[in-house]
Image: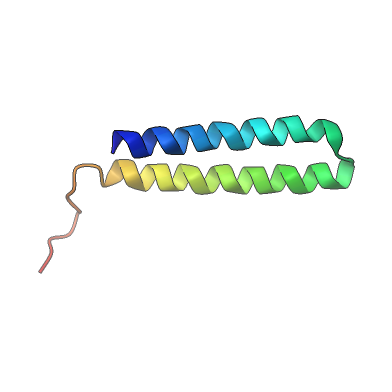
Length: 65
């Protein structure tokens, strides 16, 4: 699980860095689109990281039948 967490954190950092670097080469409308896309991507990866951490112990809240 630690490897998966590290991969997700690296992806979050790469998305942020790529969005910031690309802002220098885009006009205003394209910057808004890249910003929204990067924001949604980071939110998606943070949600994935949350569920990976939540289920890291291999047990769920509800018993399996």
